[in-house]
Image (cartoon, rainbow, N blue to C red):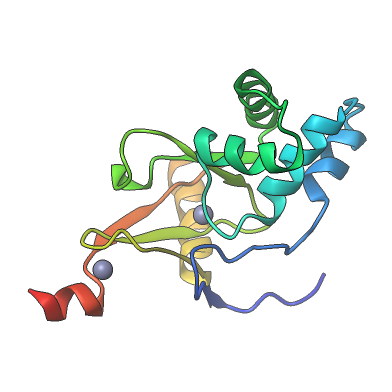
Length: 162
Ligand SMILES: [Zn+2]
Ligand SMILES: [Zn+2]
């Protein structure tokens, strides 16, 4: 296994853009799922999204590739990905309203850090976070399968404005 850096911080919104292109499709094919062209379009968008996507954003981008792609297909595809544990569902501290946002899970858990002023979101991976999870597994005798951490605060721009 390649050595993972102890700590990674996104410069834009997401760390894992195109980290593993085609991974979702490969994971589903491995599970024997037959993929339609429309589903492949959605998987590719989720795989490579530079930002977290809600249903509207996903639908808008998918319709550029296929104008007939509808909302039901988006919901069904997301349900399938959730069922297989391949995506995470986030609320991003409700900074952008009450919808949920989706992103491909892994390869390593990250923490979401959001500015409550301008809404900028970044991602952080940390060895400390990985160690904390191991500690919680031991302390609580639980095998962690999902860890969601969202942190809010104010970025330098927003601090200087107030
Ligand atoms: Zn994320
Ligand atoms: Zn800000």
